[in-house]
Image 1 (cartoon, helix red, strand yellow):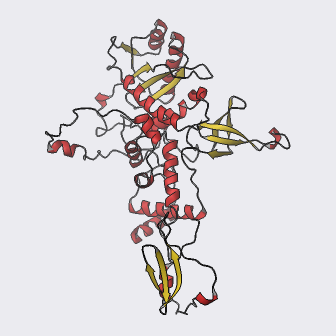
Image 2: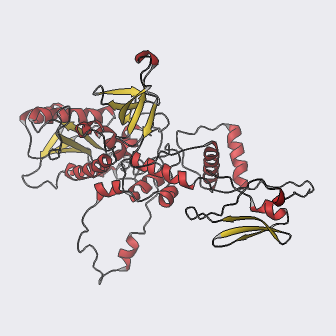
Image 3: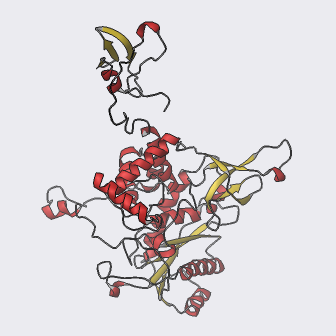
Length: 467
């Protein structure tokens, strides 16, 4: 807040009358106007001058001691920063469609993102041109004729999702499947892969294409940058993504490919114990990866548009991994739709351990005293390209001066398209209070991020009775 708040009950207790008008506010005592102020056109709040004035000093009357609640101004100071926080998280996740983001929040896939709530997204998130640039499509025709709308069609959009089991901590890679989530016979154990068209810019590392693989059961989409459609590059891309699934405990039995394949790729598929199916020429609808390519491109285009205007176009392949990471955070798993595809593969994402930021955001990375000269700058310009998964609270950044990547724990962000959320001590206290009230009124399903003791649980039960 830039200004202090005045408690109207305090003025009324001092035998004053407060009159709020369209353009000003007046405080009257003993039929005299003692304070008068205008209404701010930008914030729509009434302002009162508080300069000391001997003629307008109000002497407080002594009152007997009573126990009373302190005067509060609920959510009066944090509305502006709330919109900044929601916009920051939205850009961090690649600016997805709002409905997709709300579904992911409501299903508790993003519980570790501080302050990210579906209510906050609906109320505070401004319209994002970044989302439009990646997800704007032509309206389809004849989807629902206006002259033949049935009651079933109207009610179809209002059906609630079935209740599934909440996400659980993954201690091993065994899938727990229940009949309410998906019939075991429907599990396909199938992956598919395909390639995009040529990217407009060749990266500094020589990459020009993106190879995409989709796992039908986990719902995960993987993507790697490759240099060309050459058989060696296609084979290397397949091996990298299949190894990623194997490392996550996913063991597919069937792989579908398009008619662009090589003898070496077929041999590698068979060597890994997989069966394979080849799509007929000109018919790509049998390959799920074909639809996954459109999903990857939409999300990646939105991510690229959110980069800083000075971000080098030749470094697009460096932010592809973080774009794939956020994409899978927003996709459901077919094995258990209560979990995200990322959760199915790697478990819950902890934002506090591996913080995220808008990809391609301009940053200044700290230079240690032993690594710089006496009068040198204390930092070097760069761009955020992703989290350092194997480091605690570290960031991966690209430094143009050295043309390389660096892992650092001390950086400053200078975003272009969204404002950096500012959090004061009052903001943090109000946020904690609101979170406590929300949890007590609507308890969340079990998550591995909040470990409570017996005393704390007893205190929460008592507070729940109060609320």
